[in-house]
Structure formats: C-alpha cells, structure tokens
Length: 214
Ligand code: MLT
Image 1 (cartoon, rainbow, N blue to C red):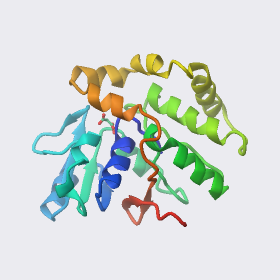
Image 2: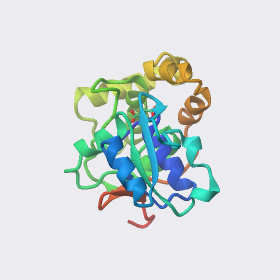
Image 3: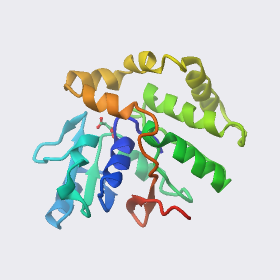
Image 4: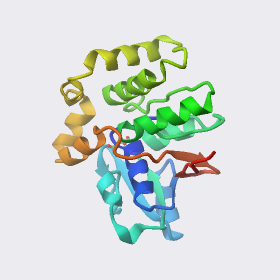
C-alpha cells in the first residue's frame, strides 16, 4: 500500500525512529480509546491534527527519542481507511518514495503477484501515489509482467516525468493542501527517495518492521 503524503511515509519514519508498532484505526473515537489504554494517539483529518490530539500524521512528529519503544494508535483521512479495505491480502507491506528501492528488492525476492494499492484522496486517484506506484513498477518491470491499465498508466507517468518529478508533483492537489497548512517541510521529506531501508508490514492488526529474513 502506498500513501506518500503522508501516511505510509510517516509509518516508515516512525518505525525507523524506534516506534514499536502502529495500530491503524478507522475513527478518531477508537484512537482516543486506545490512547486511554496507554497508546500514543495520532489522529489526522484533512491534513490537520484532529482536535484533542498532539500527534498527527507528520513524519517529523515521530523523530522524538522519548517515543522509542511505544505503540501508536493512528487514524488518517485516507491511509488507515485503505488498510481496512485490503485486509484479505496474504501479506500487506507499506511503501513510499522513502523506501521504494528496499520495497522493490523485497518484492522481487518474494516472487509473488503484487497489487499496489494507492490510498489516493477521498476515493479519488492522486498524483503522488500514482507516480510512486510507477517508480515501484519501474524497478519491478524487468522481473514481473505488468498487468492492467492502471499499472501501465502509473509506470508510463513515472517514466515520462523522470528528471522533472518535482515539477509534476508540485501540481498535486494534496501538495497544495499541505502547503496551505505550512507543511512544505513534510512535502520535501515525503518526496525524497530511499531515505530508509525499513519496510513496515501488517501483522495481527499491528504495523511492525518486517523482520529481514522473512
Ligand atoms: C491520509 O491518510 O489521508 C494522509 O496521509 C493525509 C495527510 O496526513 O496528509
């Protein structure tokens, strides 16, 4: 699953910075309930931290050594909702530009059929998730056959925009939305490639770092 701005980028960053696990929840109410049970509560709606919460969906929220070893309950506008829509999958892993090469390496080694699910924005396609899916497909293309027009469109869009990816992504609607919230720092961070090698995966309802030999 891919949600560049910002859910999957944030999950990867949080686990890289020592968060033990992330429990995705659909509603702000459930997030609040888990916070009462000792989780760190993180809730985002429309790019903003939800009322009553200190943590939202910025990767920078999790670069805090005092959170190391803690479990986070997370709800976001689109990302966590998407996770619940793909629960039947054999394996769910989380990708973003920040871990795109390690994700491709893992999928190549896994040698299984892959469906890239983009969170998009409120049931609509978005630019940044599509281009990241295209980047992943580009890395996998030599060893996989690419099936279906959505995957072909994503791949062609990535290839056509190589070298001027920033320009293309700057026109994305969520980039504009986050800029209006003064979150340029988050945008820059989320659009960087291969900052990390870690790959989060879903296990028994929790998002945890994938153990390297599995
Ligand atoms: C989402 O899940 O909708 C997003 O990641 C939104 C955001 O926090 O920018």
